[in-house]
Image (cartoon, rainbow, N blue to C red; front, side):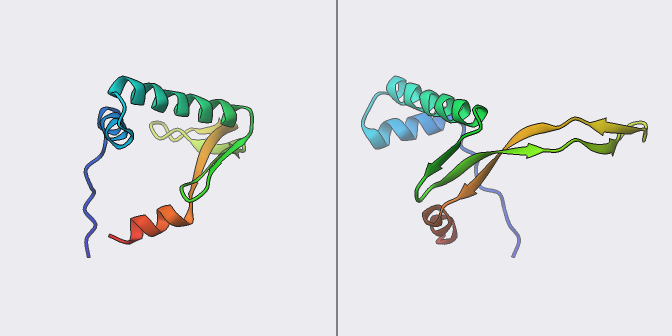
Length: 100
């Protein structure tokens, strides 16, 4: 069976859906979404973790310094250590995704 990607929801569409689901204005829904993103970002920047039962958890992951190659020249180079974000889906989210 070939996988076909679903339509991608953008922020405007997400705000519209959030406003409809919570019966609030799009401006209020947009402020709520922006606040959620800011709060999660700040917590991860401090090294914390955000857990939303049933949905999933966001946590900061550290990438060690490693060696690599410049794809244009083939020259060896060092890739600096960095931080990334990992998302682990919760059981309810997994079930919802697999039920379709």
